[in-house]
Length: 313
Image 1 (cartoon, rainbow, N blue to C red):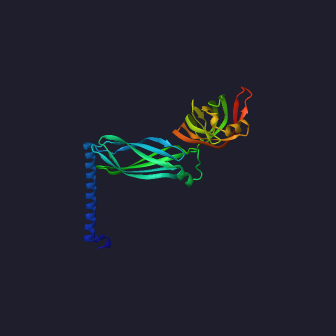
Image 2 (image 1 turned 135 degrees about the horizontal axis):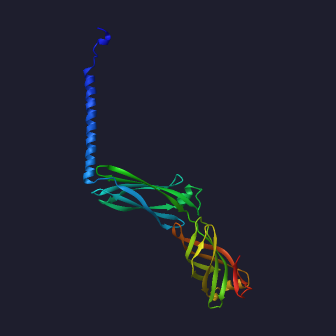
Image 3 (image 1 turned 180 degrees about the horizontal axis):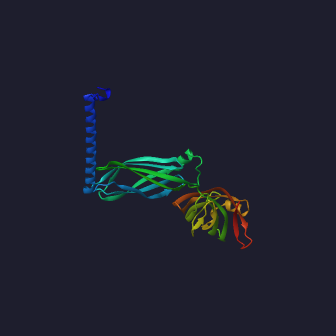
């Protein structure tokens, strides 16, 4: 008998193991297929499905020189006949690939059956933290941001799922405007009551427009308060621009003492201003401080109308 005619000898144990492996593999595949079919049948019959989520809106309810309070509205829809728990919310805000803020909100609530919920994610962006970390981010600038949110939900049949979301936009780093008193135009002068108009110069050092709609401040001449006034009409201050506004005011010159005589004699007197302006911006309303320390004023004769004007040196 030639070698080619010899029967092939196979170890029975090895052959049995191979057969058992093939049988087990086939059995596992059948079980997986059965579970998959059952899952699909359950989903079709009972109505289970994957939830969806989207960033509905981003609010800036408060923004000033120190911080920006941000509220992220996330709309989640649950198509299932049972409530599903929102296990965790993981969020990240970055700018040009650099992290500005991140956090985790555990046990964020429950989404009702066959319902939808708007989940609010409140975060606070502290400007000093940003400026101390990134030197190239300057006050008055606008920076791009990318928001990343991972919603982790627990859904029957599907198990724990992660719903990733992204949103891009811009956020400002506000800078307070500069204020100067150009002059005071006296409409009526008496020792008991003087009515005047303050001519103010406001310089906007931000990369976005300011819509000035309210102003509150107090003025001191030689450390004597001459009172405060209100803005009569709104004004627009272009980005990196200058606007001039007029504010009526009344005060009692006899309260000034020697400071008024110094002004009349042309010696000049110091003035200061402190207050706030309320402005509208592309990013929402803001209340920004204004201040001027160490200004000097004096009375000068106005040749056109015979009145007295006070010019800022």
